Length: 341
Image (cartoon, rainbow, N blue to C red; front, top):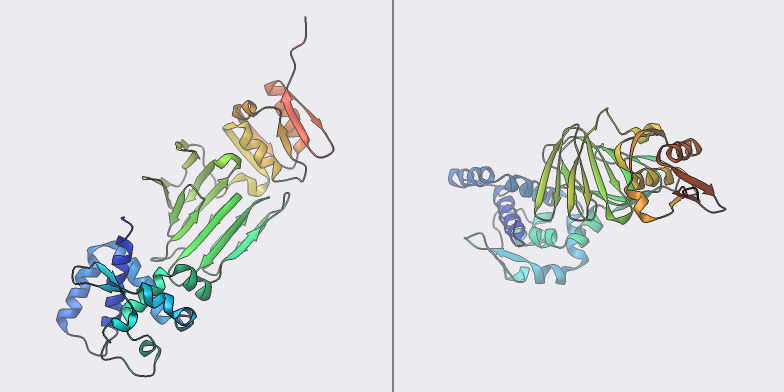
């Protein structure tokens, strides 16, 4: 979608909101609306967002918060569907609206709606504040969002969530979280990991944001869309995706109803040692540090109990010819030295 295309669609949707809420309708207008709404799935989503703004009690507060800013950004919808920008006061008044109600408050309603939608930080801050959730190492937390979605947050993790009448958005800054998303027909649920955007309507999936910018997505129910750059992947239940920089690869072995870490286990299947160490470090205050960066690429297979750190380290040392030692503030995992002749 080109940058101005969403604004154009929102402008058309706002115009239809105003028209369809007039006291009198004719058959030609109704038929034109039916054609427009059926022409593109994005029209449905945009119309739903604009309808939510129309009905929101926070709309007047949002408009009143910065009227000069909104007026300067107000778009006008031309017959072609393109937008031009100018003050709200220059826009024609929409007839047929009852005086004294909130619709009269902002005269050029279509323009005001789109201006508000474009002023996303202002609108969201007043209509639905962003909420931060975080855990320390060794902690986990279950969060219930207003839409019915449940998030199980792993140790040393942080995210923010915002639920509006037209959107459900989470930004995960670090760590791991399992999402059991309440199904809705229109409001998509999106998770922004920084380098990839995950979108669903209702499903269960796990997102892991690791050190070094690596991300992993595993799907346990439903269908998940992952967008990164110009690429898009659709992941059904039982599949996953690993993202490292611009490199993307599929993940196999995704089974069960939720990830094993919720029960205190990690199932490693040709998993990088760096990822296993990352998981261990979320369960305890004393971090495990690799002796050299190249060790992180060692591939590990097995089932490990995350709370049994000593057992896990002993197992890794025995299988991969490693050694570990505990210091005051950390545990160092290194390669075993070859015996001298």
